[in-house]
Length: 120
Image 1 (cartoon, rainbow, N blue to C red):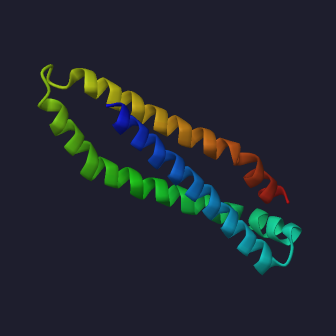
Image 2: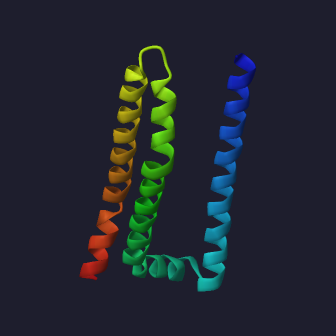
Image 3: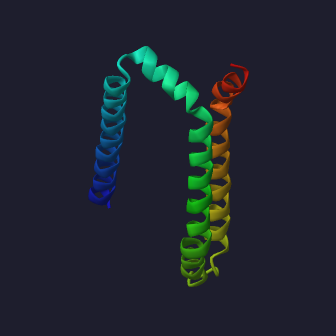
């Protein structure tokens, strides 16, 4: 069991490093294309509402895929458990709510940029 847990942590760390490296590379490319860090920041500010639309569409597609494909599979696996999946279902609902709350926090943290775009 300990070996399996270590492999999960290894995958998590490698994926996190990969995501950070990809973000840094995309930022460097963007700064190069824009000409300077200030021009890149101005472009990002100008594109803020379009990024919001993109993220909302992405959330809708991912939510739809989850509800149509993954949630029914999880529920069927839970139904096979000894207690009929009641405890697992409660955990699943709690995780779903936490994910919605995390997305809301992320989007609310972007709200000042969006408000600044409309005023500015």
